[in-house]
Image (tube, rainbow, N blue to C red; front, side):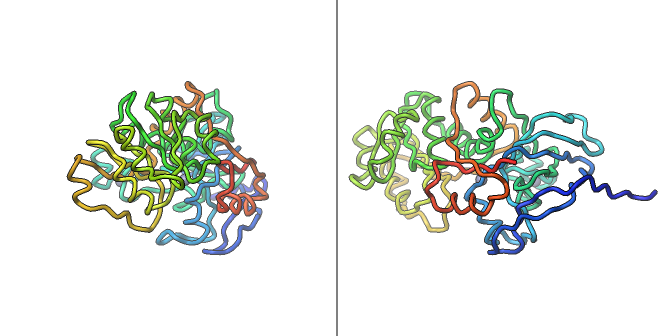
Length: 344
Ligand SMILES: [Zn+2]
Ligand SMILES: [Zn+2]
């Protein structure tokens, strides 16, 4: 049988030609979905700090050219062979969890989130900085009606990360929960923590974000530049959970002393610097330090439904796909309020 290569029309793609190179907007043929895949007509894709792994080549074995993007929302416009649970015209998303192998020890225990061969869109295969994207069905997230594409996109990485970390943190309604950093992750973490019924202490550097933190649902604001945040938390009885979103290991180290008995430091802000802690800091008070990464597509759906139900929304700045380089630079500047999203 002859294989026919169907070139419908070229599509626009923002690709990284090689590690460290600038973005290039190029034309490519619209790809055909293979078995177990769907093709998504992309509507929006968030620009996440983890895209630096693709842009700068920080992921072992990454191949180029590569299209970044793991906060993708769009419409299925074609399904591949063997796909029955998803249909054309359905709104879907793809987040950090881009597919599991189904065979590793973690997957065999049903722990797909910790698959040892986890696929990540924009790293393992081309992600959402393009007009059409192929995705395996195990990565698909159904998008609820009540959320627009551009506001749903950041919930698929920044949103799920904070939502899932908090709901697995052990904190109960009424507990003192501190959210460190009023940024891309933190501004969502504050909203989720507030809607979970926690007593929310937002911790930021300087007083300029105090009003915004309270608007987002924080009950109180601690300026870590003006005072010791750990002492401020101890004066309130100690935090049950500290969600550390700011990629600042020094601050995380200082905040261990802000935990109450059985308190937990939940680390989601990614950095290469070590957190310093003494055994005694952990032993007295039975404190825990735990890391957390995103979650499965089902966890993403929980995040989206909860956001739809409670009004949690990301604050976004949108850029057209053609300005991917500018959008990425804006995200890297740290000045975006708060998530940058490409729209197609
Ligand atoms: Zn991300
Ligand atoms: Zn696996």
